[in-house]
Image 1 (cartoon, helix red, strand yellow):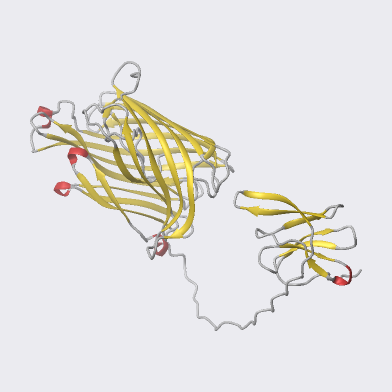
Image 2 (cartoon, rainbow, N blue to C red):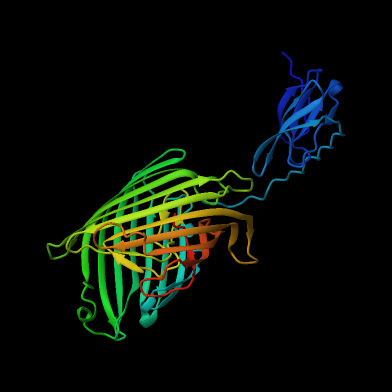
Length: 475
């Protein structure tokens, strides 16, 4: 048994193939990207390709043509050229090697806080109508090995009103994933004819356990949660709430919910959206008033569909559609608000998300433009890739990964009894620029800036386009 070295130039040599005349063709990256070379008699080697994208998997045909593959931005290509010979590039001399100086190290246990602590913040602004304008910041993070993650926001409004949320997730065990969530939000119910503003302050908290089953493109989850909800109504200037808003009854509820989610979609590395898939989520909730016999039942569902359009570019355009519906029954059943912009979702590498989204957004209208115990909202979007940047912004600790344009049409309504109003009272068209940002924590944050044009006036008579700037994606 004998061994003969045909070529040894350093680097990576791969894809050998006999040429039929006693020689051998192969790929070698000695000049940078791999190119095709041929070694014949007496080990004389010559270059056969000089493709700027590299050449791999060579095959020489009987007519002297060279077939090879090359990797482009949109995938692999098979190319055919007339084989020509070029001088073999000189191999780079081996670099001198010198051992590094000895470093003093010590072994310690895993410390999660250095990677988990906040490394960035993003300014926030929210307009809560008669409740005022709120200013604050958002931050998020996860530890180095993915055991813990969190997202937090805090805002301050008029009269030192505090608003914000904190979501914490633990994946320390294989099953289940544990989550803890708490939030306080202010909203404006409206203003009476005498000028008295009616405000709502909603406090929510939940602790849940999620069991997840995953395959390559499919994910199914079951979440069981214990929940607390407290609603308080206030007036400005201070007066008896029942005298100016008879339906504004404070609630103090405890309960539980079960959420089932099934999703199947293609999520490519450079994609601007999920593609060729479907996501369905159904939530059933039971709540009871503390210290009383009153109760409330709630059923919510959300369906999203995605379809890519086959065009060239760094990512495919995507047509996306979403429909959300809900109904609430019982003596202390709440109402659903339709209208406004949804966001606040931070995706995690394991497929989970942190934060909360508005259930029934209709862009171009104020939040909760219409309310009722039954609600529905639909959306249709055309998402178009604009630019793949992958670069930082000056000396700021933030980078812009890619930009996209979304053209949308929204519709929605809320009502008390009977069938769905036709057509829905809220309908709008608009567009938004979507930017995927990267912060030092490596969490992908999506920033959306857009404008919505109402096709019909809001019930309060307000017309005209509304601009918005929001973090996170809706669907």
